[in-house]
Every structure is written in structure tokens, then in C-alpha cells.
Image (tube, rainbow, N blue to C red; front, side, top):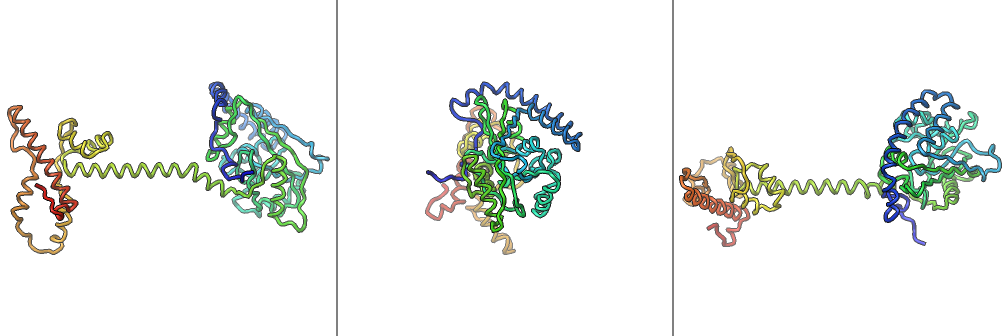
Length: 423
């Protein structure tokens, strides 16, 4: 028997592979139209239910009708309870979808823990406005202890997040059951027809996307199996009690009670969802930096060519040499720009720094420097009249540009030190 990994507890793909995808593809047009109609009707019914928030019977009827319209079919199984009156008002269930609280609230009228990702109005409608886990578990413990006297029920899902419900349950967070003496386990199982076999919950997907897929499928059957109440013994710690409740629900679902936590799921989401996005952003930034470096190289040789023109051609050629050749051969049309100051190579700029910092008078340039500077001038003295003269002038200027680029490259990388010359 292979050990269960954290990846086995979650689905990373919505649709099935192979031939099972064919029925879903055929059903897709009908499902999209059905989801649109259901969305419009459900919004209206939610508004109607909010108007009867304090009228329990009417609100429960509206929510039941809304579930039927949304294709949510609720089936309750009390066969394992000898007497329904022995059930505990504190319900503890596994978590398979973001709408589990809606299903149990519709079926039992229980108060639920609010979903932090869902709108506050929806949490209030589901009776979750009285419980705020973010304020600490002391408030939750006080409400749990008041439940028996108030003859109300409350739903807790100690996993803290959803799983696929087929392999295992996450470790129950002991803070949910702090101070609790008796709980009512509820095992939630989900079934969908073969024509739309899609995962009820995919890792890294927001809750509203899961709701849209719920509206898309023909129906979703929620089977709620109420198990016998569990009483905490006097010698049992809160952690041991939480593990015992987790094991009982896991055995009823025929899955494994794992030690993975909601924190492990967040780390898995970073690896499967967030990390690839960040890697893509880093690769894009590296490509942009490399492209900018190539643009700078081309403009060192051809400073009168606009940067956007150079960048556009480099994105196509991915080569500095090819882009320079395209510009010199006239394959690229552009409006020349006059640089505000002469372009200096990196070696020239570094050699000029000590002279500027010394504060001394500028020395007269050597004949070699004058000759080198004069060779950098590539512009024609006058515009040739004949086509043959213009062609010859262009070839001469092209040869000078290539020679200048070669000289700058040799000076920049210090190749003269090894006996190489620019001539």
C-alpha cells in the first residue's frame, strides 16, 4: 500500500481526460445556458430570502427552492441514529465544496462559520454573522456552550478548507473543538451525473468559480449521513478528541484520516499555482533585460537609429549582428535621431574618469586619438548626385560603421592587451 501524499487529497484539473471528456464537450452549450439562467434566478431568490431573514419557515422554504433550481439535491440519512433526539446540536462535518454550509443550513437551519472568501452578505444570509473565527476561538467556545440551552445547532468544519473527498481528510484543527463535550458527526458525500463529471473543487480556484461550475452541471447530489453523537471523555485532550472525530468520519467515507493541515495545502498551492506564475514573470523580466542590453549594443554602433525601431527588429531577429546588417542594408526604414552628445564606449568612459577626478588641465590629444576620432565620422560630406556615387558613398559609410563597431568591441573587452589591433 503506497503512502498518501498531499497531492492526492486535491484535484488540479477540472475536466476528465480521454473519452470521458466527450460527453462533457457535447453538454457544454446546454450547460452554459443553464448556468446563466440559474445565476439570474438564484440572485433574485437570495434577495427574497434576505427579506425574510427573521422568518425561519419562509426563509428555509426559499432556500430549499433555490437549491432545487441550482440543481442541489439534498439527501439526509439518519439510519445510523437510534433516536434522532440523541443528536448533538454541534455538527462536525468534512468539507468538500464552498457551498457545504449552504446545504447544511438549508437542511438543518444551523448556524455556520463564515467563509472568509465569500461576501459578508451571503454569510449573513446563511446565519454565519454571529461567529467570527478571526476574533479568536474564545468567542466560538462561548457560542458553542450556549447552543444546547438555546436549542439551536451550529456547523463546524475543522479541516479549514476543501478536499476532493476521495482519498483522505485533513487534520482537524483542535481549536474548533476547544471546550466542546459532545458533537454530532456528519459525513458529506457528493455525486454528479456522468454527462458532466467535473471535479467539485480544484486547488487554487476561487470560491465564485466553483459556484459557476455548480450552476453548470445538471445536478449535484449532497448525501448527508448523520453518525451517532460522540462524547469527549474526561481524560481525553482536545487534540485526541479531534483525532477521534476525524477518524470516525473518515471511516464512514472510506478514506484516510491524514495528518496534513490547511497549511500544507497552502504550500502546495504555492508550488502548483503561484510558483509557475512567478517563474513566468521572472522569465519575462529576464527577456526584457536581455532585449534592452541588445538594444544598447546596437545603439552603440548606430546611435542615430531610434531605440523603438531597434527593439522591434531585435524582437524579430533575436540577433544584434542581423539587426545591424538590416539597418545598414536599408531593410528598415526610420527617421534618424541626432544624439545630444557623442556616444562613448564603456572603455572610453572609464578611462576618462581618472582625468576628470584629478582636476588638472586637459592634455592635448595625441595624433593617434585624433586619427581614431576622425575615423568615427561616418556621415557623407555632401549628398552625391548620381546613383553610382550614392552607392559608393553608402558602401564606404557601411565599411566605416563596421570598422568602428569592431574597434569599440576590441577596446571594450581589452583585446589590444593580447596583441590584437583594431586595424
